[in-house]
Image (cartoon, rainbow, N blue to C red):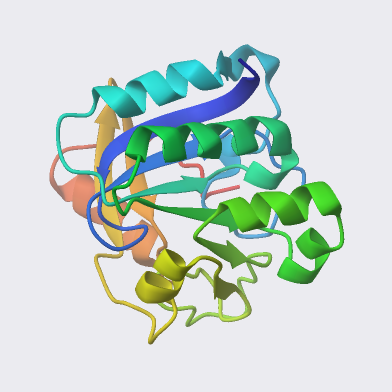
Length: 213
């Protein structure tokens, strides 16, 4: 199977789409939006590569419900072959169940549509959130970091889940792996610093933070 540069997987995710979701963050992004909350996903490190089959095996091992899969990063559309194989595997695993695939991209939809391979990858998703993060344009809503970003439903399932008024849900959730704490979601301005202060009061000191550059 194709190799995928992977930052991490997490389950359950409730802050990046409706329902209970599996989250997959790819490694590597050359866009480098100012104010990005995930600068740790920028380096395209070959050492992070795993097979797509490994990620699909993790997905198949989940014992709880999965209403959708959110693919973020990093920049998924800079690994189109691997991500296309991943989505095909998700479709095969989900069979006839209504499991939606939501993908994030720092590219605009028009740019993705201008390249045949990337346009096909868009069409493989149920919905996409596109556009670079713009720290001077707050108010993006639950699933968008800034107001310039756009949610586009692609499939009938995507239309049903993302085509109406933007849904609301939890902004942030916490994931822990060893001595690393992950804040998952699309924060509003200053949310992360408030979360860091809450962790400090709870006795958790943050030595390095991916949103501080």
